[in-house]
Length: 130
Image 1 (tube, rainbow, N blue to C red):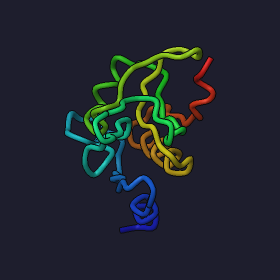
Image 2 (image 1 turned 90 degrees about the vertical axis):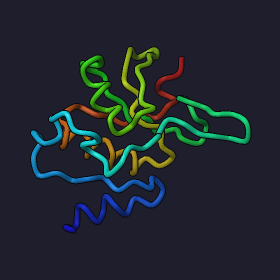
Image 3 (image 1 turned 180 degrees about the vertical axis):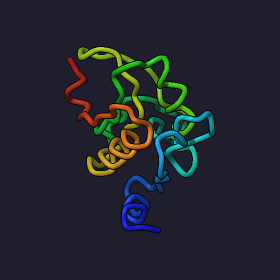
Image 4 (image 1 turned 45 degrees about the horizontal axis):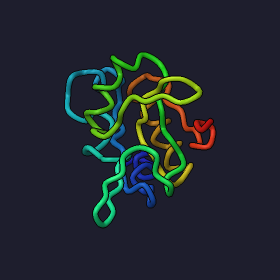
């Protein structure tokens, strides 16, 4: 494993091992989960008798995509099945992931941007509220 792969795999709070690929074309083929090692649920939290999806109090950093939502959602859902399209005062977007750590969110966004050739951003949930 090279140093970038080791760094991406050492994201302690995220618990993900991002799969680094050599070409963008490989990620755009119809293959299961092209940008993570395995599918992850990053917008869902389960409590004692409740499952919450979307805005999670302890995960304020939102990884999102704002362009070409209909075409990109199926690609993202191959690796993050609980990603979804929603809207806020800033407009519609794909909520890719809700994370508790900015640097983990940034690493995921940067990796997705590189592998999938998409603009993926991180925003704090406070910016989405009215």
